[in-house]
Amino acid sequence: MRPPLRAVAILAATAALVAACDSGDDWSQPHPAPSAVGTLGPGFVDPSTTPAPEATITPRPGSWAGVHPPKDYRVVLLTAGADDPTKALVTAVREWADDENADLRTITVGNAHDAVPSIAKAMEMNPDLIVSAGGDLIDPLALVTPNHLDEKFLVVGAELAEPTHNVTSVDWEGASFRGEGLGMSSTYDPTSFTAERCAAAIRAGVAAVLNALTGIVVWL
View 1 (cartoon, helix red, strand yellow):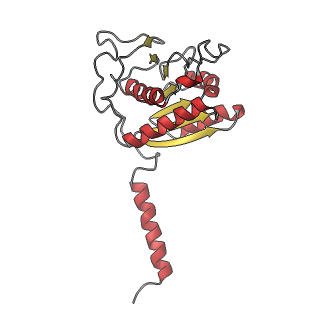
View 2 (cartoon, rainbow, N blue to C red):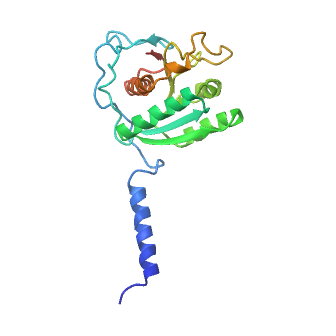
View 3 (cartoon, rainbow, N blue to C red):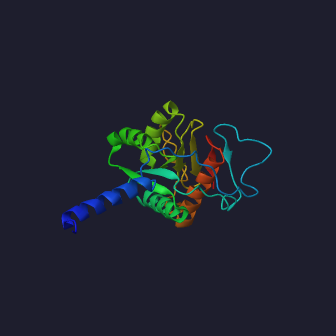
């Protein structure tokens, strides 16, 4: 005797739910510490020394291209602002995640009052990396990050004035926003946030983080 169609539908839905849980989508499940796939190319950093905290390095263009995150690398993208530079950064991060099979989730910050709670929400998700895009997040990050040194943060298209070792930034002339009353660089140029520059920013930044080159500014 065949089971009722309703029972079949329930069984199918249950099986699909179990499959989704087993697929690794649930970030609450144990997750191996991520390590880089591939190696940095010559010129990314001087191999004879480790950059000092808050140092700025200027890697050779493309020297990060051989480094990739492991599959299902867990990334939260924090974004604030609807300006063209922020949109360009968000697009670059999403395209990078798609290319690299990273598991990307996005939190969009609606207003300044939501910034700190949104950062806290991102940390509660247990990601491997939190990526920040948007100048409005710089001051809230400067407030939160020193108190959560076990969390890794990557700021693209801006930097913190005094980053702790868990915050890595990718910046360039034309970006250079530092917050904490320092405001925009006198050379700020929104047209410098090209698709190519933003794509390089996320790739170079992740390469640095995966190679434990953190707490520094990667200058493109």
